[in-house]
Amino acid sequence: MVGFFWGFIKPLIYLLIFMVMFSQSFPSMDHYILFVTSGLILWFFFSNVTSQSVGSVAGSAGLLKSLNIPAYFFPLSEMISELFNLLLTIIVFLVLMNWFGIVYSYKLLFAIPALLLFAIFAYGLNLLLSSINVFFRDVGILWGTIQPALFYLTPIAYPETMIPEKYKLVIKSNPIYYFIKLGRTIFHENVVPPMHAWNVCIFIAFTMLIIGLVVFNRLKNQFISAI
Figure (cartoon, rainbow, N blue to C red):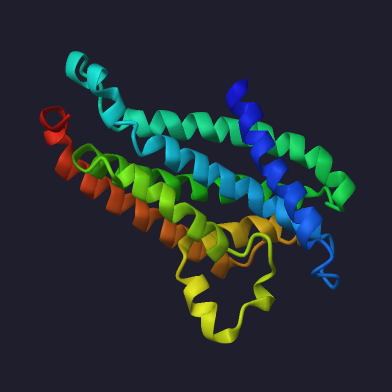
């Protein structure tokens, strides 16, 4: 219950800040609050699950040494927990979004595969970070430092159209951008994302998952000795 409350209150606090500071800055944008909310929910899911998973293997040294538990389960358990909290948070925000202008339609069902792809991407990254963190404990600190930069490099509080052309390549090199855009197309624009958007997210998600699995498999036999 505390985890769900925290998962709900964090995006709500940021939403209130953006409402006060930026809601008048983009008068031409329809439903700015809905625009921000749809991005914040997805961002905090990603932020929470990666922050908690980075130390999941190293923090489970006692279980790894005493029980024959596959190490994959530790980052996976964090993923499932946060995914459950995300679904509860979305249900609450869907009610609030009715005031902000969301259109309830069958198109919202496309959020399910969009969230699944984002979860696959996050799990692949979790495997990568958690396995490296066993040997270099500063990885968690480094990831916590990188996250704020990724947040502002992702068009969450501001529209993509305000980015100067010369900097758009920087924004588009951020893989999180594509998942936020996919979810926002569904929640904010009430449109089924085009096939190209799905293909890009599928490619990024499974590429990250493969990288995470390869690194994790190569390092997992050394976890117990390193811990």
